[in-house]
Length: 105
Image (cartoon, rainbow, N blue to C red; front, side):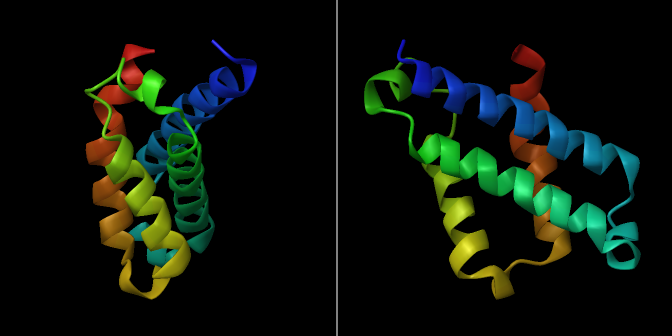
């Protein structure tokens, strides 16, 4: 496997774990009061999506259980249509997408 692909996959795993760690530290209602955690979760999810977007199709095909397009789509939404994303959407997305995936690594 190419080193750049390995780095992207590692970035995906590490940032999914970080997003979950940030979610574990605060309740979703606390994110309004302490926006630092909301930004941390947002950034971690963006990194996962950006890295997923750059993983080649032949590698993606070997991991069909990963929602590659959904990860990239969420990144695009966060970057380009950020006004449409509430804190609750971030919390729900991070908990749903990353809770199972980070446990496999």
